[in-house]
Image (cartoon, rainbow, N blue to C red; front, side, top):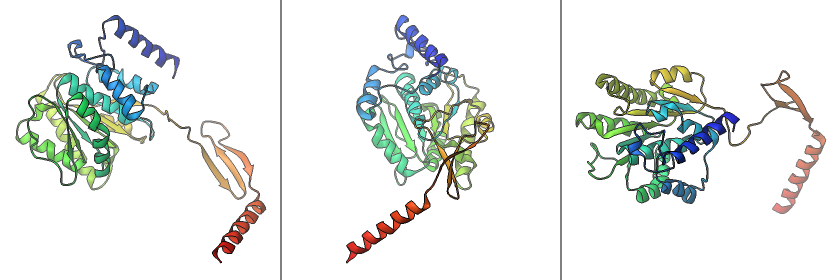
Length: 300
């Protein structure tokens, strides 16, 4: 964590305590439900008990404190794989369900990921009082059932999300949805399924622009992506703010073997290739022969 990030997080925590849990992540403080980014403290406990998460990474707190989240603007954020992107999206979805009292659509690329996320969020839905609905494979109802007292989190594949949104448009129920979260949004550039995702996102953007809704009323689009080369263009297409970070939970090291020599790779230094060691070929040859001999004797 950089000193600047640490200072901003501490400043936010002090101001939240001083102003009776007023949460800067929400458009209106009247929607504040508790100290965990506007959510009840029970949410923090659920993450600790169900997922073993005791605190957020520095970039996650910084992203949740960003202006885009505070003002409910569209946001595209990109980090390397396993950086913890989904946790940020989950917290924003819980804000929408619990604080803003609107439904959410969570778009995932594969059926297996939808099923995994259903299992992962089931304890949250039971404890916090919202519906968890699966739209993948043969599952899903068009249009979805109307809920009077609880909100719904629709977890969908790309195709099911598109069909679900179409049914809401036909029924003139688009206003029930306050947030759409899209994982692996860079798939919009792929052949086949990319066209389906692009069509879905284009409809969302068109409805937001056509109705000229206020920031508090429009459908917010949160997009996640691994590191790709055209993030700026992608964010412009999505009418989104852009947040990026190169942080990884585990340091990624790269090596190159040339003949018997192994080099470490560091693109940031003037000498990008640095000799690490030379392999003793005779040692490995003898070890392989010994292993083969031992295996052969055991087979008899």
